[in-house]
Structures are given as C-alpha cells and as structure tokens.
Length: 445
Image 1 (tube, rainbow, N blue to C red):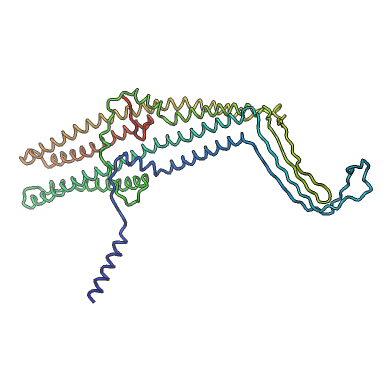
Image 2 (image 1 turned 135 degrees about the vertical axis):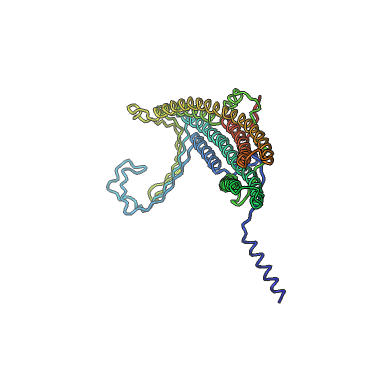
C-alpha cells in the first residue's frame, strides 16, 4: 500500500515538472548576438531570395544568345476530304475529271532551328545589365546586414540597461526597506518623529514604482531580443557588459568619412544600378536595328495513299525588322533615359545624406562620450555627498529630508551612469553603421 502511494506521488511530481515551461539562461556578447541575429533575420532571407531571382534573370538573359530548337508533330483525322490534284507525276495534263484518292488521316512532323547572329548588341547589353543587377542584389543584402546589426545592437543595449537598472533598484530597495525597519524602531522608542519615518517610507514606495516600471521594460526588451535572435520566448538572455568599453579611440571625422565611401554598400549598389541603366539605354536604342538570325528546319509528312515527304531540310538566314519603328517613338528608350536621370539624382541625394548623417552621428558619439565623463563625476560627487550627509545626520547636523535627498541623488547617479555608458557605446555603433562598418570591421587610424 505504501509502495503504491509512493509511486502515485512520484508520477504526480513528474507530471507537475513536465508542465513547467522550459526556461534557460543564455549569456552572450554583443558580437555573438549580432551573428545570431544575422543568421536568423527574416529580412536577410528575403534578400537571399532576391539574389536567387537576379541570378535567374541573368540566366534568362544568357539564354537569349543560345539557339532555339522547336519540334512539332501532329496526327489528324480527316472526314470526307475532297482532293483535287491539278497535276500528276509524269502527266502534265489536267486531272479535273478523275476521282482523287480517299484520304482520312494525315501525319506531320516539323523541327525548326534559329540562332541569333546580330541583334544590335541587345543581347550583349542585356547580359551585362543582368550581371550588374546580380551584384546590386548582393550589395543590397550586405547593406541590410549593416542596418540589422545596428538594430540588434540597439535591442542588446536596451536589454542591458533595463537589467542593470533592475539590479541597482533592487539593491537600493532592499537598503531602503531595511532603513524603514530601523526608523520604525526609532519611532517606537520615541527617538524619531512619525512624519520623518513616513518620508522614508514614501521614498521606498517611489523606488518600488521605479522597479515595477523597470521590470515591465525588461520583459519587453527580453522578448524583442529573443525574437531578433530566434531564441525561444522563455529564454533569459544575459548581455555581456564588455561592449560598453567601446569609444572613438580619438579617431578624426575624416577616417569615418573615408570608410563610408569605401564601405557603404548602398552607395556601391547605386553606382552599379547607374551602369545597368546605361546598358538598358543602349539596349533600348538597339530596338530600331534589324535582327539577323540563322534559321533551319526539317519537315516530314505522310498522308496515306496520297503524299509522303521525308528529309525536307531547309537552311537560311532571316532578317526581322518592325517597320512601325519608322513612325512610332521608342518609348523604351525614353523610359531608360528617364531612369538614368532618376538614378543620377538619387546618387547625389544619397551622397549628401551620407555626409549629413555621418557628421551628426559623429557629433552624437562625441557628445555621448563626454556626457559619460560628467555622469561619472556626478556619481563620485553624490557618493561623497551621501557619506557626508549620513555623518551629519548621525550627529544631528542634517535633517531626514537632507539624508533622503542625498540617497535619491545617488540612486539617480547610479542609473544615469549605467544608461550613459550604454548609450555612448550605442552611439559609437550608430556611427559605425553610418560608415558601413557593421558587422564590426576594423577602422584604420
């Protein structure tokens, strides 16, 4: 009986554990997060499909230079076919008075061969344009990698800030609650006024509210991080803090400007699009040129009791020209020229935007780095201020309000230094992104 109860209890425990959600902790660096995010990115999967599409279009362009070979065969049943042979072999006379053969079926086979010889270089320009567009698709994918890497860095930074803020608030809340217990005992012993004790409890409540808000932000940031990295939703990601030590390394603006010119994939992609558009314009001009092709064919026919044709091979050169080109405007050429003008304007605009964005991000990174130094001094000052205020309070030289204000100032300074360091590192990553250096690449001094 006891054994059965033990087995039943063991099974119930197993079932209870089986129903618990699987949750595990994963500690990663920012570089690891970027690599995981790039491998999981849906956008990059779309870009990969676009590269495959561009390769297929290149194959289609190359196929136009290859010969066409078509084969056609048919079998036909005829009903009451009236055949009037105007002449017969060996007899030049008319056969109008003779009854033609009875034909009720026919078989026909044809094979045609065509090889383009000259088409005004339309095929050549089409292949050249398609090759460039394949490179454009690949560069677009690399440009998207740059943007996605920054988005991952942004999510990683937000998660880091919320996690560290929770740590600081939790530690401060525990100290504040301990202080409330001490103040309550002092009040019970008649040493502290109730009003002063309530002030301390009010500050504790404010810290609890801050902690609730931080936990809410943490849950959102954690879900966002898991989605970006392709991790299970219950995974707890612990961001490594090594990324907050990044800085500008005293690099001048000109270094980042030069890096942007050589590394911005969207700029390189646009230049290739301009070349492809130039080929499209040449191809459109060639539409007015006749097409010359080598043609060949084979015909076999069998009409029982009437006609048999075998080994009818033909070979020749064909010319095709649309006379409507003489009075119709070449709309394709007008469209191609307009596309070239559009890309030229986009190129100028993109260059201006790169300079403006790069300059702004460089200034933001410098500002964030300097702000971190100010917050560091503020942390040191607020720490010393709290120490002095505690000594004064213990010697009845400062009020409880002074003590609580000093404690709140230190808490704010701790949170500010965490956020400023993370924001400074994120600003540096934003600068790298605008220079086309993400995922992380070396920048020469």
